[in-house]
Amino acid sequence: MPFKRFVETGRVAYVADGPYRGKLCAIVDVIDQTRALVDGPETGVPRGQMRLNQLHLTKYKINFPFTDHTKTVRKAWIKNKIDEKWAAGIWAQKIAAKRQRRSMTDFDRFKLRKARQIRNKIRTLAYYRLKKRAAKDRAKNSTQKKTGELKEKKEESKQKKGEPKQKKGEPKQKKGEPKQKKEAPKK
Image 1 (cartoon, helix red, strand yellow):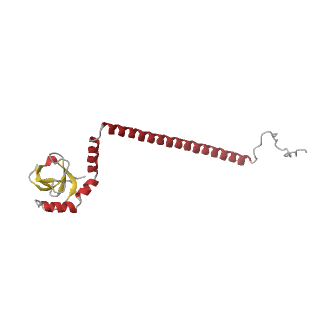
Image 2: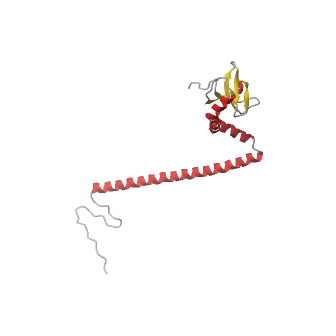
Image 3: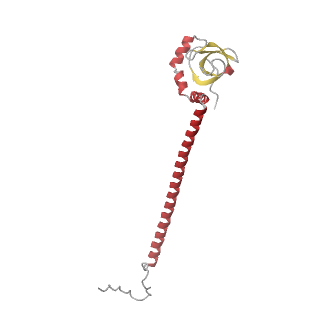
C-alpha cells in the first residue's frame, strides 16, 4: 500500500512532543526539511514553527491556501469538523484509554482485576456448558444412527428370508410341516 500521509499544507498533525503535547494542529507551510509552520486555532496551539519530528501526521487534511491567516484555518477546521472526526477515531480512543489507565489508583487496578476474573469465570463456564451439550448431541446423533442402521439391517434380513422372526418360547418349525395353530386358553 503506498504512503498516503505527506507533509503538506492543510495536513492535520498530532503534537507528540513539546509544550503543546497531545494537541492537534494544521500544517500551514513547510519551512524546510525539518520544520513546518503550524497553527491550531481550535485546539490552543498558537501559530509558530515546529520540528517535524515533534509531529505525527494524521489521515485528515483540510483545504486552504498555504501561509493563510489563522481566521481562514479556523473556518476550514470547523467546516471539516476535524475535532469530531478525531474524537470518533481509534487513535484518539487509544490515547484516552492510555490516559485513563495511567490515572488509575491501586484500588482501581484491583477492582479491574477482580472484574476480569469474574468475567473470565463466567465465560469459561459458558464455554464448558456449550462443549458438554455439543458432546451430548454428538453422542445422541451417533446412537440414533446406529439404531437406525440396526433397524435397516433387521428389515433387510426379514425381506431376504421372507419369514417373520420367531418369538422366544415358541417351538421352531421344521420345513415342510404345516403351521400349528395356537390353542385358545380354556376358561
